[in-house]
Length: 157
Image 1 (tube, rainbow, N blue to C red):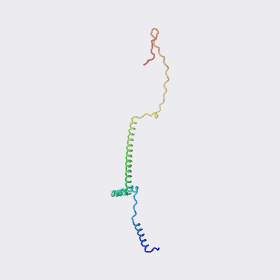
Image 2 (cartoon, rainbow, N blue to C red):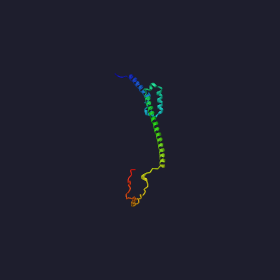
Image 3 (cartoon, one colour):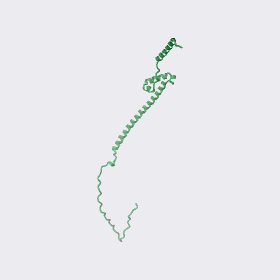
Image 4 (tube, helix red, strand yellow):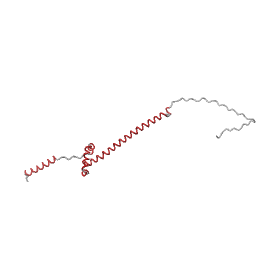
């Protein structure tokens, strides 16, 4: 069985037509990634606007799903930024309060200085004077009769 030119020409023309149509058709645009949309806020706004106009397509379109993910991440990021600002403001306020309390404490310490036993000046110790010889007690006068009256030598008081 021989292939005739009449059958080759239409087959070749059909193949050329299919190749030309495939080459001329626009290539599908790949969906944007999360990082691309986070960096390009204008594109994110455009995708969100497109998704809000066509609600039925928004549930299944990969661009809309990606845009929702980006919006959620941006919301979390903005909450972190706000929390970081609050923490920084708290730290500044706490530092100001600490400095004010330190100044107040220093002023109070200046009014009432503390005695530091380790930094006192050394004072030479003087020796005690030598003890004086004991003085003999004087004997009380004895009454007539030679008897001494009873004397209480200790007291309970």
